Image (cartoon, rainbow, N blue to C red):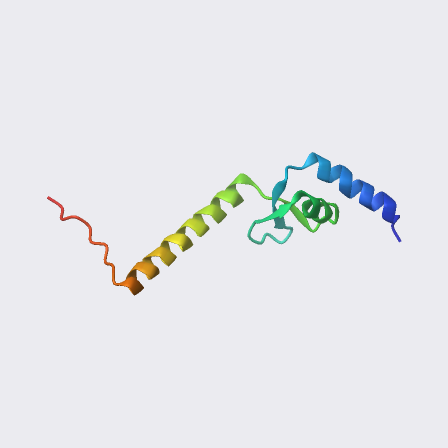
Amino acid sequence: MRDIRRYWKEVRDLEATLPEFVWLVDVEGSAPVEVSAARAAQLLLAKSHRVASEEELGAQRAKEAAAGKELQRDRRRREGVAVVPPPSS
């Protein structure tokens, strides 16, 4: 069994090098998730996750923006609001 004191020292040392929140992706490539530095240090040391790339974060943000627009459209539809584009000349 691994020395528990050494493990937690490694976690604390790694945590100190990370920003307050970190975007991670599991090694199988799931969607990025934002976690605290403390949790990120544990997951990175376990080698079950890696830091998300800028491309992965951009794709996730685009998905979230599209989902937000869809929710807004649904809310307007339920409220009976129709968005009509101006006539083209």
